[in-house]
Image (cartoon, rainbow, N blue to C red; front, side):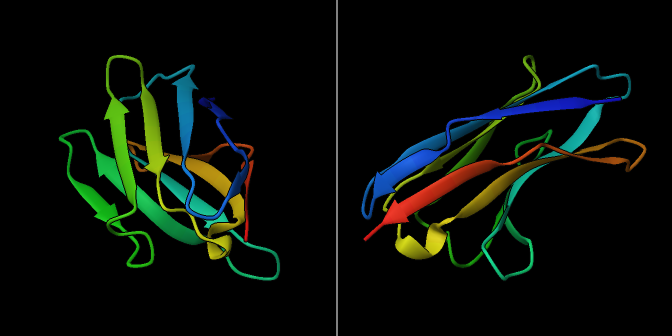
Length: 116
């Protein structure tokens, strides 16, 4: 069973920055896509950004130009650098990994709170 450990959440003022990390372990099958999703109170979980093993990225329109996703394949780790944070970015952020069999794994979530 793949294990995902997230870190980097916290409280930041609007306009500030945070960097989230997610390290995957206990990997048997190669990882295909790594990404981040978020869920705000009373809302559905939504895509933030994904990155393939080849480096192709995909972003939600709401974070384009402010967030940057990257991954270190050697470390099986995915990052998201979040700049110019807004109060509406407040949510629990979840790491997501899909392996080559298309099995999907989720992290436990890390809280990001942006104060106005």
